[in-house]
Amino acid sequence: DAGVIQSPRHEVTEMGQEVTLRCKPISGHNSLFWYRQTMMRGLELLIYFNNNVPIDDSGMPEDRFSAKMPNASFSTLKIQPSEPRDSAVYFCASSPEDRVQYFGPGTRLTVT
Amino acid sequence: GDSVTQMEGPVTLSEEAFLTINCTYTATGYPSLFWYVQYPGEGLQLLLKATKADDKGSNKGFEATYRKETTSFHLEKGSVQVSDSAVYFCALNAGNNRKLIWGLGTSLAVNP
Image (cartoon, rainbow over all chains, first blue to last red; front, top):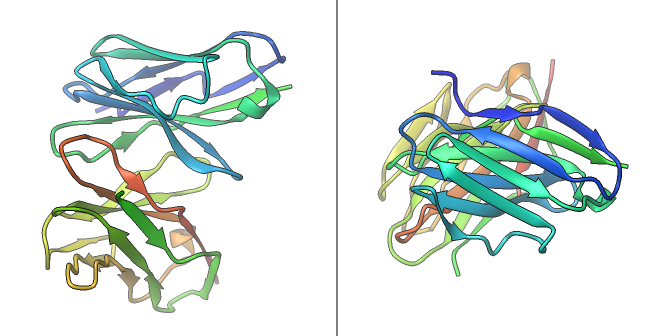
């Protein structure tokens, strides 16, 4: 089992640029979660999907953030335009029916 | 609403010391309770869980018992090792959705 796969692992970009983070969940898991982690704010849930449908996006900071899950094996989190305050580690997690969440290794985003 | 409260860190111990990290919760109904661990530079991973009152979760020498009367799920280990240095998160899942409600995390440093 490869686990949750995230790409890229590191991203450095300039303010105003578009950033796309990618996630491949564990096969057979029907829920997917996007989190952001910073020292100041800790771990924040941004959005989660169940069976590819967005269920709760109340944690998405603002309209600059968007997430999609076109099929059961792929999801993206897009930031457009990016700002320095978006710098953080972004985690994707997937979950089967038992509600245990399995986290990917994260994408460290730096916006200069 | 549902919430999780963890003891604040950082916690610093010497190798072979006894560890307790307190976690209390507020939830309607009968939540499932989790402890996750995050090693430096990695994503969170499940350490142990309990799904009903009086259940004891255990893994890698760590234990936690689901105490409904005190709404607690304290993490314990009899003899910590340097390799246990990490951040520990308590979490709960209640209701029909898949979201986990997270504590703020407790940083543990174990010195040789």
